[in-house]
Image (cartoon, rainbow, N blue to C red):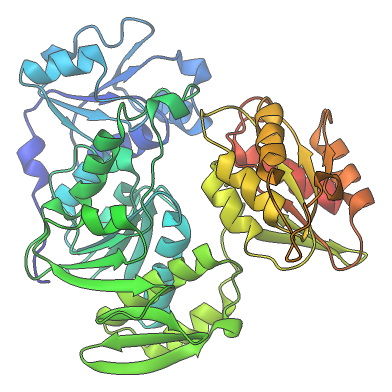
Length: 484
């Protein structure tokens, strides 16, 4: 893996450059171009007083042309190169017209791949990217690597690119929107679980989405599409779409699985994490030594361990991280124990699949908080899982999806029988509705909970009807729990 992507920023001089969208990503590009003495124009829908404080400060201290308002997309064809923030869709008609006229489009991610002097590890998947990226970073850092963490998690990679050396490693969490126009692939690609997400019917509140499932999957394939034979790809063996995503890559393949043993990777067997690499198989640690809860987090750990070990990270350091890593904020995050009741914040759960994974992470009796704004998701399986779970005591429903989820739960009870063939009564499950605030939700959950119970916020929905975003939702939950 000696390939490096280094280009010289001199190649950008003389070009008419624009930055489209001046939030976190656009600001990072502006700082990068400014450090390298390159001029540019900023195109932004919002007026300056509506921008992030850091962006406003940059504009006050730097003299760059700024075009705002409804007409900010009107003259894209006058530029040679435009850096587009991922929240702005490629299928926008004016962007498509500019591309047809010969305008080149780039992004934070593409610029980093073009100018990075070191090695890149790219992590993608429908869920688990942030946790896996952080685990890889921690494992390599503990093993003495010169390693940096960026992408959707941590800082923009352009913010640390000037610190990198040829021996450096950058771990990037990459969403489908960052991958959709990528024309280079990382030295090590990590493909986690891949399911449908960010589709038009699921994203009424989002300015950017994929119009079809095929378009989403094609974006994911860019992580491996341009790899070379001396690169590596780490694949989730347990998901068909993940296996399909990497079919075309010539890179060396490694696998991880919680369901079966694999040759060339890390897997779960007989309650042990085992690694089988370079024809040497060994036990890594016992499953009950893993700090993070849930099978989905176990998948993330296996992915990270596979990646770290193929890069010759120290096994003992890898095991130390597995045993001590407490996870990311808003991802099955333990908040507090009150009178024997443990509260967990999984506000990052915005799909039924992630809520199901969270529910299955606990064997203790549970009170689950579900609901939010509607992404067009199908809650049938979630309803069935709740109906079939004897240890789900109560469900607190919030948001506009409350009725849809409740209906799915009731449907889930139909035809259920206990081992003796007796119908399972829906009355064993308490459903609470019509609570107007997170404070009321936490208060009701506390009233329902008994020592040994789990209160789990894992909404399965977006947050925009009651909260600013999933972070605001999770923070309000934590604040209310901690105020008890």
